[in-house]
Image (cartoon, rainbow, N blue to C red; front, top):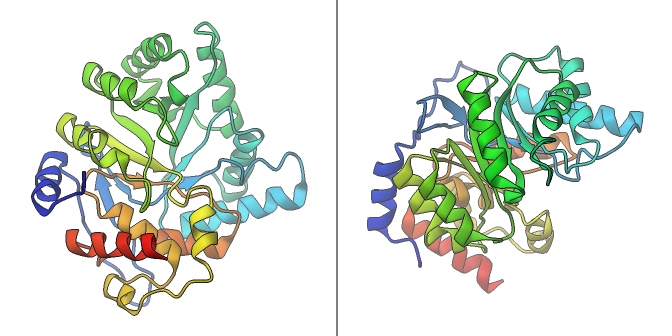
Length: 305
């Protein structure tokens, strides 16, 4: 289903997404656009930081410092949301190292996952993740790729009730298990879902994104660049002159603005190892964003390259 102007406006109204541009002091970079978490009304920046592969650098001191530099630049640009998982190798302690070096900013929005087939091991895994990060509690914990999802959701909802975490979510990626994902969205009071969505992978526009708006669920978008495949493919192609109409000066911003313009999307979480790229990514969360007609023009342009 192609997103029409009518469904776009309807989804925007249902989701209550905030397209607010905070005031900017003279001479300073603009703060990123924020979106509202429907279940709480909390506003969060529309671009976060993913850590899959990029932060899995082990104990290499040079690479750990490079990741810490990315985290520092991310917060300096106005970012807040960092997402990780026990599945991501050494990413969790590397995040903890970067946060410690930065002085543990109180603006952090920590998004973690539980990823184990053992229901009994879920709480201990979450606690180990918390120690790696060095945070008092996680803002959001998600069931990673629906592994043992029923038992883990029981754990997470109990943790939320005890104020050990603030939000509960589930994740999927690369279009997997969407039917089950949809049913869980309908049956449980989730705060967040995380899924794959970008300018070429648009299946979620048909059911999942509209359902998130209907149910008041925040949406985190993973794989916005198809793990870098999209930006690498487009790198040698000319950015259309009309990209300036939406303030996009790179392919990464072009793709992110397409994603962020969908009214059901709360935050996109591109991953990167480079300071210049993390600044560029956060800067994509700024007006103007494309309207429905422009989004279709953008998608057609990329499709035809």
